[in-house]
Image (cartoon, rainbow, N blue to C red; front, side):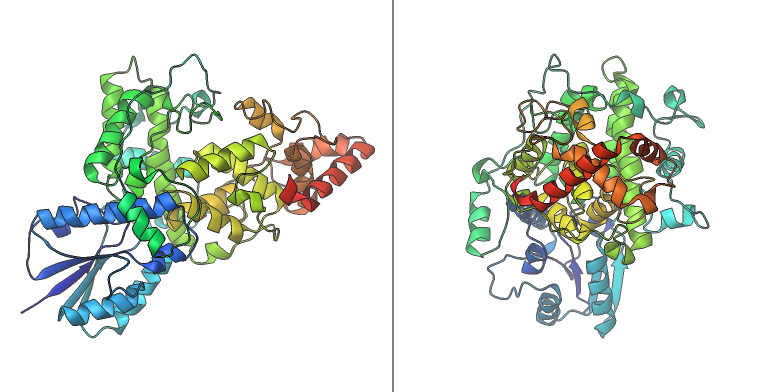
Amino acid sequence: MQKTVRLILGDQLNHAHSWFSQVDHEVVYVLMEMRQETDYVRHHIQKVIAFFAAMDAFAQHLTDAGHRVIYWKLEDLENTGDLIHNLNILLKKEACTRFEYQLPDEYRLDDQLKQYAESLNIPVTTADTEHFITARYELGEIFAGKKMYLMETFYRIQRRKTGILMQGKDPVGGQWNFDHDNRHTFDSSVPLPSASRVSSNQEALWKRIVDAGIQTIGTVDAAHFIWPINRSQSLQVLDEFITFRLPWFGTFQDALTTADPFLFHSRLSFALNSKLLNPTEVLLAVESAWRANPESISINQAEGFIRQILGWREYMRGIYWVEMPAFAQLNFFDHQQSLPTWFWTGETKMRCLSHSIHQSLDHAYAHHIQRLMITGNFALLAGIHPDELDAWYLGIYIDAIEWVEITNTRGMSQFADGGIVGTKPYVSSAAYIDKMGDYCKGCHYDKKDKTGIKACPFNSLYWHFHVRHREKLERNPRIGMMYRTWDKMNPDHQIALLEKAEHVLANIDTL
């Protein structure tokens, strides 16, 4: 008699996977809550709850469908907390004659399971997760022999391949992207979405996590947990986004505001990254909504969202698999500064950082501009070691899985890859932050002051960054203008800016 154990990881909760197309009682599905996964970085409490709650709900879904399921909780006596040790126990206990697993999306797990499979003396079969639109190494094949991975080129190829937002061979609306329409500050006259959010009571799970001694960050209202933890809730959030948020999503997707932590963003990233939702179904739902309601959902709203998933999300995963594991060691600027202690508390007088970090600690969420141009911008200007920032981003955000986190952080945000992801470092002074929102209003620091006692730290750090990395950056065609501006400055002002920046760096924990 053949008995197969099939492993399901916490981010492989795909209801439509072909594994589940028929019930076979000689197949047992295994899901495990593991300290290996809770402890490799310090995660947000909401992230741990979300993954464990979603795994438990998925296991119940499979059981209800008639499948044989083993679900090990943290406190189960046989659960060692280690993937390989647990598998050894399970394979022996089940007298397994075959082991199967879906290809992990993280390099560390892919490597761990590959080595384990090679050590077994029974047949091992791997399966695709049947989730992504592109194959694991497709981006590398598209750009074989090229010097750069151009996201816009990749995006257009995916549009043509899928037919999404296409009219024959041409993009709908006559252009490929409408990003120039999607850079507005929030207009308070636009009503915020009033739709209810999904909620579940996770007090029992929260208590199990605390009792297990897992070290987490952030806060949670476990009685009213707001993230979707099953397919039904995920579809509800998708419908809610399309109905109430998509009509303004693109316009205000870059806005920095204290008005609402989510504004018009979708809150779908956890459901997508855990595979409760399929990217194609999300894209088609958004496209269908636009085609059905072009008067209320303009093309820039739909295209801006579709580009984030069909373009950016697939592109980042492609870079991850082409460039790992070396990508995780890149430090182009040789930055060595430690992360300020207030990154873990939000207790800083800089209002933009205080708000963004407090929001992250409260909700395990921040949108892409908060991550790129507030926390990431400061970290890059201050010379934070990319390892430290990677660990922070990977832990604090509910949607952070390494394949999407590290390419955005070490690549797009920190330029630690030297230009694999982005064509230039994304840095700014206070002027950009003020332009995009209300963070500077009421701040302890003066957004216009460059060198005074209350000068915004971003202003002097901006020039200090460019000066200390001039040799590496001044030939970049997108940055040359900054050096021409610097060279025209009064030498006394240059000295004052650099001295102010040195003072800021020397007192970074008390800003």
